[in-house]
Length: 176
Image 1 (cartoon, rainbow, N blue to C red):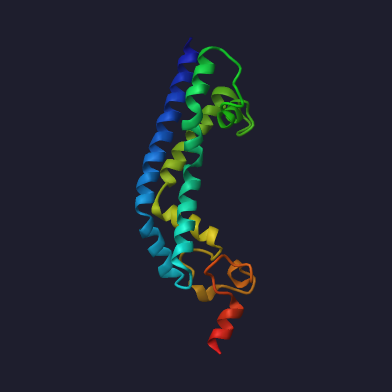
Image 2 (image 1 turned 135 degrees about the vertical axis):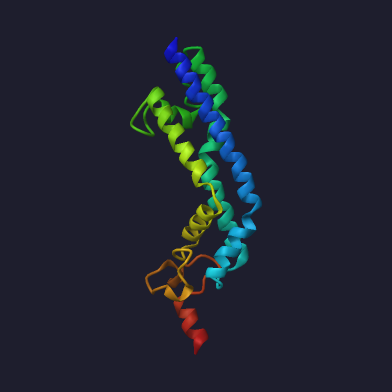
């Protein structure tokens, strides 16, 4: 009985933390213009629409686990409470955790590790983290690197650079 109560507490904390992540994510999305401005200040050669898209994408990546949990937690908790085998089709994400596929720890230990990961994700859900993620998605290096620091081997220096990134060749032609 004590183990079941502990399990219920972990699931409740996981659900609560995932709700907090989603609420914080809404706030971060509301401040997306701030993230776009930071990136455009450092990488003026980028198109604002592309930067905005990548900021949204980086933010949503930070919310993915929390959304999966919200979608699955009710069915998962009910199944556990009834002593049923976890329905992998109904809760694929939480089933991965429960069966040890995600953390190499199963059941309550796996859920405890998920809880710890969610707490870290909540702490990381900031404009700075979104800027870092968007910059990586844009393939332009670190947020504080000026565009001139791009080399011929950087993603921005290739003809396959993300939209809005001027290639080294295009820069050289424009400078002539």
